[in-house]
Length: 131
Image 1 (tube, rainbow, N blue to C red):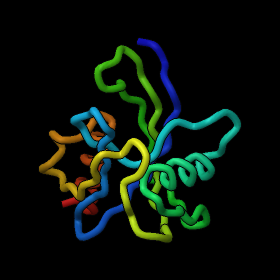
Image 2 (cartoon, one colour):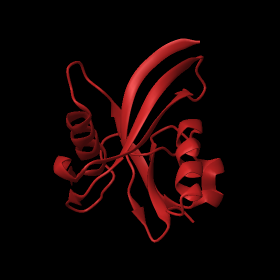
Image 3 (cartoon, rainbow, N blue to C red):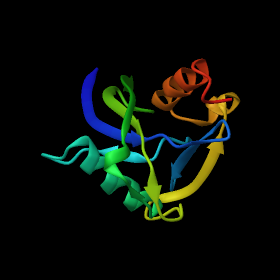
Image 4 (tube, rainbow, N blue to C red):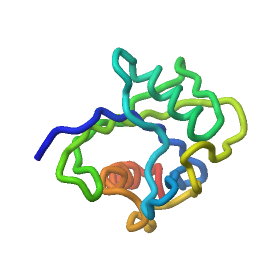
């Protein structure tokens, strides 16, 4: 398998459910975030991507690492690294740019998310954060 991009994503949990987003033309949801641009830190990538996708500003000083994994990209023969953080934010969450829909999902909804996102669903459910 080919190695793909390095992605950073935001995990926001409320009342045992986690925020996910779905791009135009896609059926599966994923955590908001995206690929690192050359020279960017995790904080810079997360702040830029979440602002572009959800119109809110991440507070980089509150970022806390959840975990990282290497997983196959959905429908492609390559792997990518996904590193997820929790963080506080400012603003009202609104889908923007390529985001068609946002949703608040629980562990039972894992069939609606990408394979990499499912790995984090299991982790968050296992430690009691996700119902």
